[in-house]
Length: 152
Image 1 (cartoon, rainbow, N blue to C red):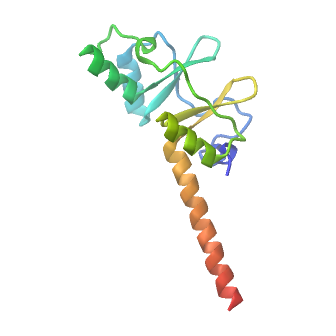
Image 2 (image 1 turned 45 degrees about the vertical axis):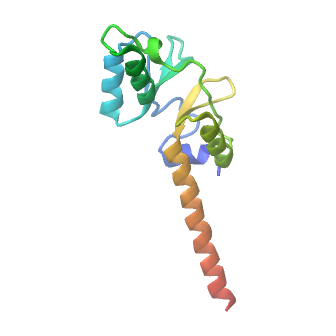
Image 3 (image 1 turned 60 degrees about the vertical axis):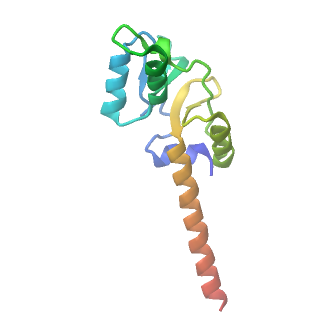
């Protein structure tokens, strides 16, 4: 299974741009980012500059880290104050198993998907990848059961 198939299952058609990816600017207030995460029921938002280039990723973990380190994350803080700047990305043809290994090693839960020009075209989460693997395991099991039934 590859990332392209996951994006299709999520309703993101390859070639239609960033589609359903939620983004925010680096100068947005943390309070606005937190409201966005809550309203969209997501765990992270891709941070893009005015040209649409990925400059960071802000996750719930980043906000909690900001609370722990600073004692208070208030309206004065901006997304760029707390975002993760070195964002690991993936591509549509990347293998799900490889990405699961990468996410586990890096301890990240979200990977923006970019094209060859590094333009944002989607996002996959650890949940998307695990669901994909479970779906494949169920399909493999059903095929094996069907095969064994026909061999008898």
